[in-house]
Length: 365
Ligand code: ADP
Ligand code: MG
Figure: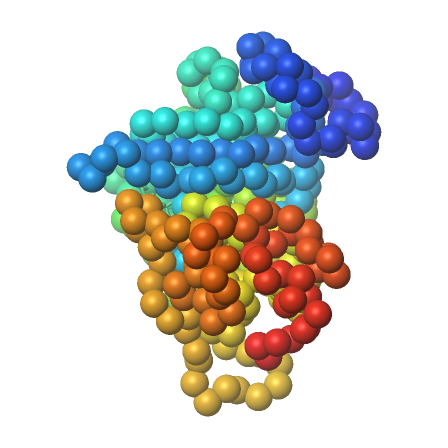
């Protein structure tokens, strides 16, 4: 497939993350670059702060992650770790005071494009699904009207837009779709409303879908159905998906790769199986330990990680996780560990003890 931003070949050279600083400046000035064209989405060293009554607080501290073509990536972490802010930054929807870094979508830096271009990309090329369809949907307009709007604002004629919307609604499993187009959001159950949101996100045939806790508000059975549907649509339409959840269990069957976030940083990332069976970060290990096990025995009680995640106004020195970490050493309260592949580790981890953990597979299990 031709990639307008950066040529079509996606060679290994193109995957080189950085280029020279001068390359990056030129790319920034042009708003478009070959850098980052190996992945469909590539976030680089994203920092983001908000102005609050406590002063400037840093919600993201240098987040880098990527989503390949047709790849499903899960972003996991407890509440407040910066998952939603990352998603909103991709969509250009975050009311931040200060943002630095780069967000390449198909070679184009979304932090440096015009607001008009960003609106074009959002909705058409990047679809999004949020946790709460009731607040994302307009209660006084029919769902048919709202789904077809995405197409209408892109110049698709009304009859055609309505036809495609009804097809999409049918595809997400709404029975009698043509008639349900005239219904209002409150006339759908929670699970069905989330299907309507999925139809809205996909009707313009985006290449990337950003889903922020799309099933968190649903009960477990409905949650599984909606996940299955998303997975099916992702395969059918060759979608890339950035899937955000606080629940590591949810990503296990869905994402091919997982990025674990804590206090506005990436703590560990790797292939889903790698993370589940060979994690080399105490935070991920803690999350894993608190999951109900489907294999083997049921533990007497689920453990949780003690303590609470820090607020960005009051992040501990050194590794932000150290006050809750059972493996912490003195260095952990002094120095922020870089995100690197430890010897024997296989994938990147931001932990001073990653190499030590790599020698002790299954230390917690
Ligand atoms: P998550 O989605 O991982 O639960 P968020 O990305 O929503 O976390 O938030 C990350 C941090 O940024 C939180 O500490 C949150 O309080 C802060 N934050 C998010 N949005 C705003 C905002 N609009 N103004 C100030 N702080 C914010
Ligand atoms: Mg969130």
